[in-house]
Figure 1 (tube, rainbow, N blue to C red):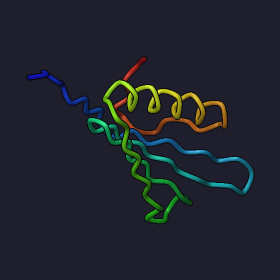
Figure 2: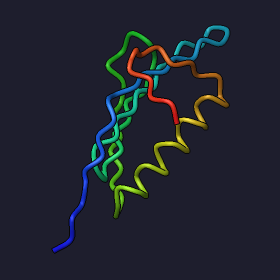
Figure 3: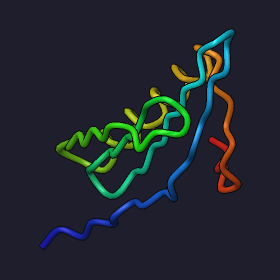
Figure 4: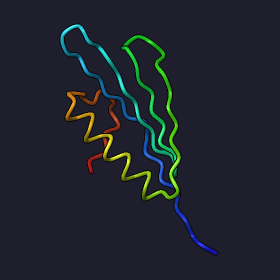
Length: 84
């Protein structure tokens, strides 16, 4: 029997306000699933769920997305920031 640990990182919210653009992006890592919600600030947004074969692959994708959003000018607004 193989022991596995489910990784769960609390939801984090990011916003981008450039010119007239006002967007948000939220991410939640729950085990092998990466759940993102994105859209215009004030809207319910759209949800995307991606599943990965392992927790490690999901965590790698999570970190890659965080780096990508930071590069695009998104700033974290949630109070549950976890440093990596």
